[in-house]
Amino acid sequence: MMSGEEEENAAELKIGEEFLKAKCLMNCEVALILEHKYEQLQQMSDDPMNQVSQVFEKSLQYVKRFSRYKNPDAVRQVREILSRYQLAEFELCVLGNLCPETVEEAIAMEPSIKTKGRAHDDDAIERMLNDLSLIKKFE
Image (cartoon, rainbow, N blue to C red; front, side, top):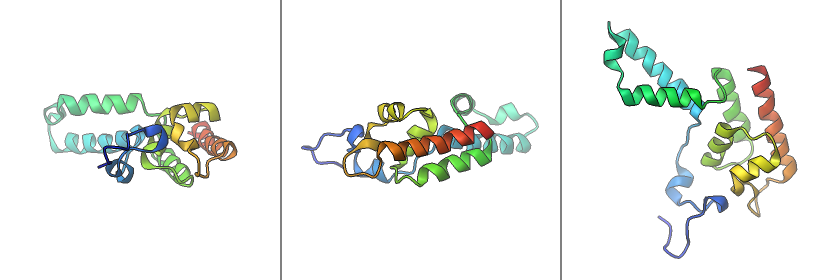
């Protein structure tokens, strides 16, 4: 936990140790996992709807609706590309989920990527966004 004196602030990556170390998943990654589980449940039952809870169904619908990448190879490439930029897990997921198109959008969505002392100048952010846009084009 964080000390009482230091207030949490995601814009400055002050989010507590447990969140900094947590493994985060992008919506597109969760969609792949839930779709796989859904297929397993369908194979195990004569009536697939018996096996799937409403919460599971709604969760699957949500992540499919808000996933910018559908193709499993594209999903893997997005994580690979974003992993090259020394992002915290949650920063990677915010950028992977929201797919900003400009440096300004990226910084507005995830201000911590511009935190002083990190290697993210506007050129690096631009390169990252260009890499991501290539995946989207070919998906």
